[in-house]
Length: 75
Image (cartoon, rainbow, N blue to C red; front, side):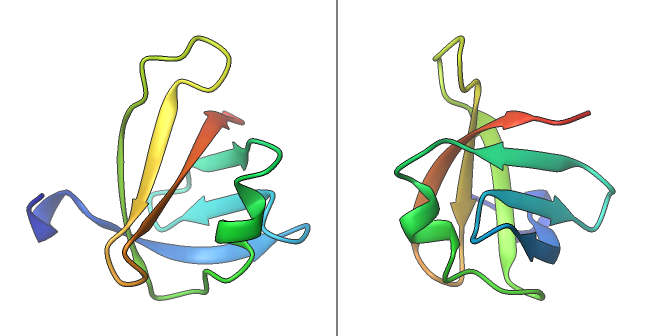
């Protein structure tokens, strides 16, 4: 994954359940995956891709923490 595709985290809210990125996009992390995203913090780089799941259509890949969480858009 190229760094050009990555967006910086601006805020992690509600014990890792809400992730806001620099472009203003907000995602709700699916239950269970927030045990990963709760450890994410502003300035880390996220790549957003499709997960293939209708209920949680996005895969947030943290390039700095080297882990992932599935999510749905709040926009």
